[in-house]
Image (cartoon, rainbow, N blue to C red; front, side):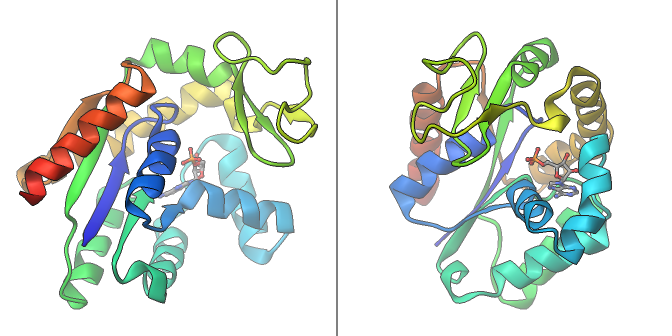
Length: 218
Ligand code: AMP
């Protein structure tokens, strides 16, 4: 069983590594950011509550997030393992997760911490563009679409997430530094932390993660 957490600042590549890990290990990928964006698109009550926080680059309150994650982790497809991406993001969220898993006689296998310099993140995030239709990710410099503003995969419209605007990006990084970075020490003290250099190419980071997981599982 692999119960994984992907930790790291926004733009570190957690989502990208999560997708590769899903392919390799066939585990459900739980991204709280994706859950909120889907709820906002639907216009559900959760979406209406969450939108204000996402647009401002602030964290959604712990009680809302925790309820959603517990509900998701209780579903049958998570019983053999899971990949959490973007959760936990605060110490209270991590404590809740530990309590919840302990209650089910389970625990976190490893916390994959992806480290990237803040200046690199600002360039990555402010240049990021996403397809409105299929969520494919582009970058104005590193990975532009063939035709400006149009998705290579589905022809959908490419747009900039509101929270990728520079001012919001700076706010998100500040929130990360103040509220999420303390989780590094939290998981290190519990012997769960494995840190990777997220400025390396995607495939290199992925290979290192797989190696670390294999070593851990013997
Ligand atoms: P992400 O796609 O992971 O960068 O998340 C986008 C936004 O969703 C964040 O800036 C927060 O507003 C919200 N969010 C996602 N995960 C959490 C979480 N674990 N706790 C609080 N807010 C979250």
